[in-house]
Length: 106
Image (cartoon, rainbow, N blue to C red):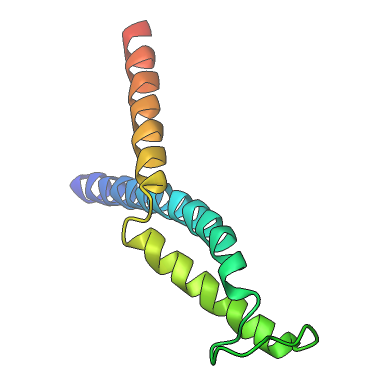
C-alpha cells in the first residue's frame, strides 16, 4: 500500500510543479507581449544598416518582428519591468487567501 501512496504523492508534486510553471510562464508571456508592442515603433523607419526601410519589403518586416519578439521575451525573462513579478505575487496572494477561506469554513 505504501507504493500507491508514493505514486499519488509524486503525481501531486508533478501537478503542483506544472501549476507553478504555468503561473510563471503566463505573466512572462504577457509582459513580453507588452514589451514587444513598445518595441515596435523602434523598428520602423530604418533598417539595421541605417537606411530607409522600403514599405513593400515584407521579409525585412518579418525578420524585424521576430527580432523584437525575441528581445521582448529575453527582457521579460530577465525581469523586465516587473509586471510579471507583480502578477505572480498578486495571484499567489489571492490563492492563499482563498485557501485560508476554504480551510476556515470547515
